[in-house]
Image 1 (cartoon, one colour):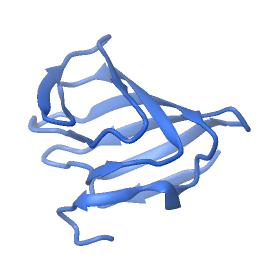
Image 2 (cartoon, helix red, strand yellow; image 1 turned 45 degrees about the horizontal axis):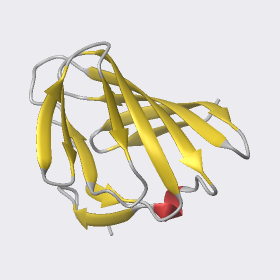
Image 3 (cartoon, rainbow, N blue to C red; image 1 turned 180 degrees about the horizontal axis):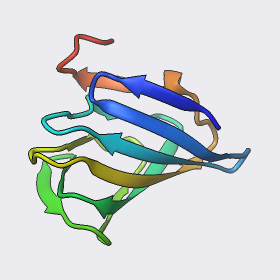
Image 4 (cartoon, one colour; image 1 turned 180 degrees about the vertical axis):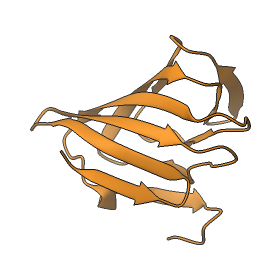
Length: 113
């Protein structure tokens, strides 16, 4: 199982196929992913635990466990953890390509491009 540690937390790839990719994402307290978009995929995030503050284009909303965020291809999005407990999501990607090089970062707390 692929596992990667990032400045905001970590993720595990649970399934990787030609048609989709599934990740378990842990966002540590005070962590947030870059504001980003993708050319070749859409994503569906299901919150498993914690309170996830999710931005999709110009809408920012708190999502609780069991709630689902649908991120269309090309939509600007990010998840943030404003709490003292980890946020865990399951991310399902659909599209034509799932590589990490299909991340276009608009804003990033960790100065990544």
